[in-house]
Length: 274
Picture 1 (cartoon, rainbow, N blue to C red):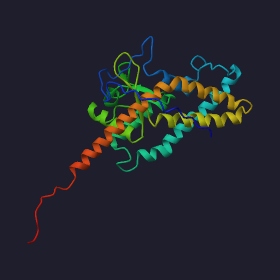
Picture 2 (cartoon, rainbow, N blue to C red):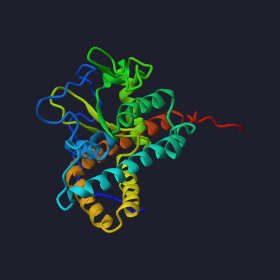
Picture 3 (cartoon, rainbow, N blue to C red):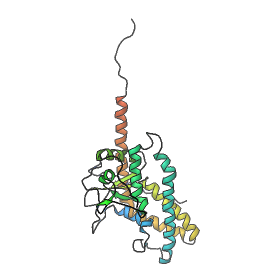
Picture 4 (cartoon, rainbow, N blue to C red):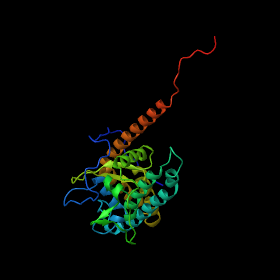
């Protein structure tokens, strides 16, 4: 299976607000122009089933119109391979004993992200902290899927600060990924229910394998075009995710160091005997 990776040699850009903050309502309103997520996030999602309609699916230079259906089918297979990975090996990591796994609130946060992304045929989406504490809302009511089930009624706490800390914990442990969005209507963050690069590498790798079966004559060339397009569209997203991951890791290490320091034995300096 072919793998995809991006160049990590570029410097990381830290945003001015390294801690998760929420200055907005729980509902994200899509603007007439610009992104509510990020250019890279939108690019990835149009390769997922959510973007497989004729209007949304990208016309890539070098991929003929008659080949687009083969590519769509292959990417669909790749998307569901990522979903299977989440429900299998990645879920084992999430449910592992602390400190490696996620606690109850952390598990609910990841479920909330999963329901809002994979539940709508996407790998990533934008969230406000209010959506975690109050649930996923749409048009003044809790959002429901095509089966009529509520997507999420919240993660079990109304404390946004607690949610922000838990998000950093989950990122530091490599259980989710996050990055600041480009939404100009307020403050929101892009989240993926597993590491972003893992999700993309799995999707593209399995898509390549499927394309080799269905359209072997041009599979390598088509996937090279897709990978080059993803690199160009998503580099900024990867940089932001790297920066968020680095900050979360440093924050988590500092927290562990403080906890360990508090547990150090105190020497009284008594002399025994004599």
